[in-house]
Image 1 (cartoon, rainbow, N blue to C red):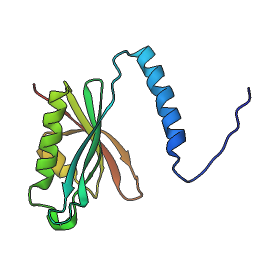
Image 2 (cartoon, one colour):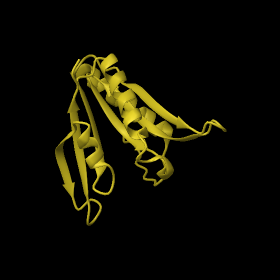
Image 3 (cartoon, rainbow, N blue to C red):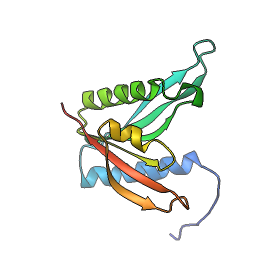
Length: 142
């Protein structure tokens, strides 16, 4: 069989699902115990119930990877980030995670994460130009 290649600039959930299923099967054969689980901590408007921000993560093996965090500008510096992170870290512990990791840009929240005990373990300089992308981790105590 000679597969057909296709390139697109559009997200394709069906293709992503095939890639993910194949990768998980490969990972399970190489490092048993793969049980990725989604984790979402949401912020909702109290009047409408509409989602306005939150945190999206996934646990895999004994690590929690925080993929996305967003707090609307009007709610920043009022403790919501701390509440989101506390809930995510508590759930990570409940899932048996030893480590939480994430990435952030130099124009985002690195000082916030460092105040929470996260340390930089990698840096991509000049990404985007004039800035850096930081990878941080935190070891969780039981």
